[in-house]
Image (cartoon, rainbow, N blue to C red; front, side, top):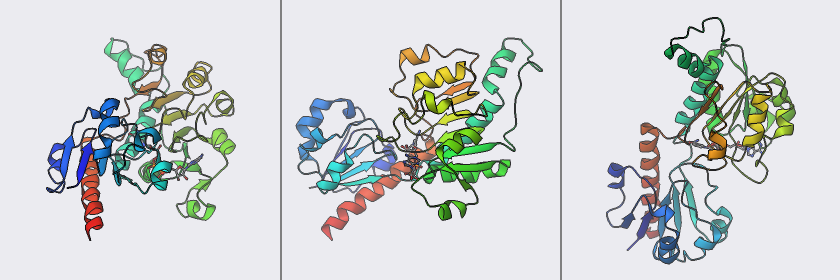
Length: 311
Ligand SMILES: NC(=O)c1ccc[n+]([C@@H]2O[C@H](COP(=O)([O-])OP(=O)(O)OC[C@H]3O[C@@H](n4cnc5c(N)ncnc54)[C@H](O)[C@@H]3O)[C@@H](O)[C@H]2O)c1
């Protein structure tokens, strides 16, 4: 019998498509029960998680029968992938399955921040008429700097193209030829800071990208850009971001991800109504449509993985 543990939300209808021969334990709250995981993980051949279940080395050491981890999402920073590689545990992310939702979030946030929609709407709802007092802008003609040019950044590129935007990207792991075949320019990190009107971040969280955006980096921005982070918290130093906003170095920001999630009181208490910003609870990639796609994909690949062990 193959034992599968599901520790976070999985679309219930899709759950029924998991192989009927599996013995399945599904409890979307188990991710927070470390004791349960430590005691029981040795029983499971496969585990399906989102981003809240912490599968670090010390818990994986106890998972002596584990062969497969299905990740209902993309980032793998909650899984010790090095341990998995060394110990023959296959890790399956739902690569690309929520990319459309995140890309829409980025374009939507760019428009809302350029048009200061939240501030203008708030004022008008109060009976004010800020027709000439709040300056708003078009997306057309702006330079959009993409930090990282992976799956999601490519979707943003495709979507925003119809707005007549110029694109530049910083991704040291992708060749000039590959990037230029998309008809956008590969630039250095300093150039992207200097030239962008909008900076959208699409890199994984790693030792290298931790606090990639800090005080010194903000100080190199020349066009008062809008900053959008839908990748991972911790890539931006939140205190330095707020300082950059207060000091007029950036003109707005959209954050879907935070250094601590749920959001820290210390951070959200500093956000005032007249700030040009959008804060969302790590939901850029979580729409009804993407949830179904992600769940279908992981259920399907889980079935195939265990079938391939039998064949
Ligand atoms: N907010 C959400 O709901 C949500 C949903 C999906 C993905 N994400 C996050 O979005 C991010 C991007 O996802 P993706 O699927 O496009 O990933 P991806 O792996 O396809 O692309 C990441 C890109 O970043 C580049 N990169 C890595 N380190 C870099 C560095 N130091 N400097 C510049 N570039 C670097 C890589 O070369 C790669 O091209 C990830 O952090 C992922 O966890 C968030």
